[in-house]
Image 1 (cartoon, one colour):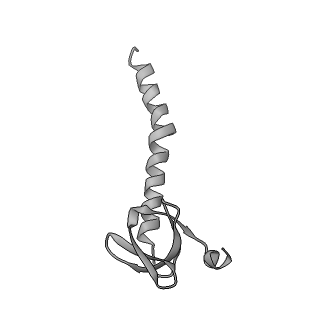
Image 2 (spheres, rainbow, N blue to C red; image 1 turned 30 degrees about the horizontal axis):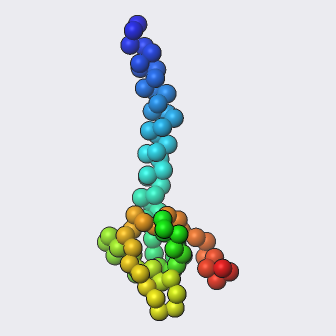
Image 3 (tube, rainbow, N blue to C red; image 1 turned 45 degrees about the horizontal axis):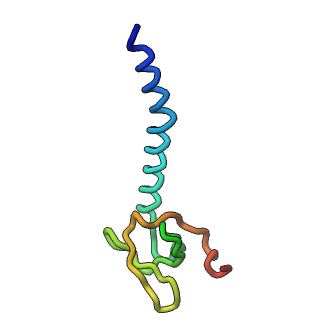
Amino acid sequence: MGLLPMVLMFVVLYFLMIRPQMKKAKEHKALLDALAVDDEVITNGGIAGRIASVGETFVKVEIATGVQISVQKPAIAAVLPKGTLKNA
């Protein structure tokens, strides 16, 4: 009977903290696996650009005409809808 509060606390902690974090990590991994050339992305540092090439661990992002930078795949924060960079 003394273990019941501890078990309940762990269950609540799991559903409020651990499970959502695991779900978010799974979604980010799926986003990284689906990266393709010409996708418009934003990095964690706030740099917006278009993917020029996708490697195993690095992605080349074109941030201006003829200017490409290499970033690690996990640094990609979001994929933008097509045409977003033309409007900016």
